[in-house]
Image (cartoon, rainbow, N blue to C red):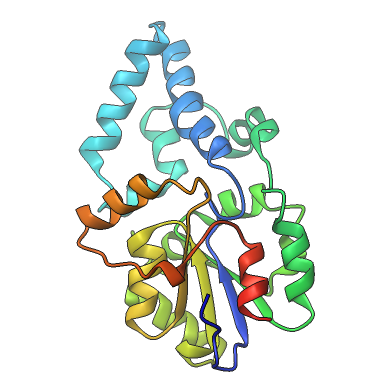
Length: 229
């Protein structure tokens, strides 16, 4: 893989699918809320799931409310706090096996940050065991009220950290929000493909008219150590 020649100062990470599997998030949104709705309205989980998913779709991911758990707890009048709901699924949280080793290696030489679309509460709850490695946590939805990690989002992160885009490496698993958008402003972005599913990644990229260099696709975070070697 081509080595990065610029002087890197900051390593940025996405969260879901990058540092942790999506099990906890899926548990909260796709099991927790429908289950609570079913219990409250005395209907089957299947019927509740259908109603909840329809409501999610009606709001849509282009509206900021779609990302706010508190909005949905109030909308469905579920009578539970986010902490109580989080605790129901805390056993689903898992840090990918190589993550802490990589963070330890990088921490002495680089500033480590989080750049995520998730709400800050989701980030902190899932990353409790590794939060001390990170100097800054940036949430597009919580901090900048943006529904996606846009070019402007990454530009603002550079501005706040007082670094140039080419002094940052960003790693994440979304072809647009973790690869295309940061690269548009000059950030050294790498697309994480843990499943090594070439058909899946090619379909995602082709559907969004994205051309990803094979030199920019990594299978796990240990490859960042090789890139910086």
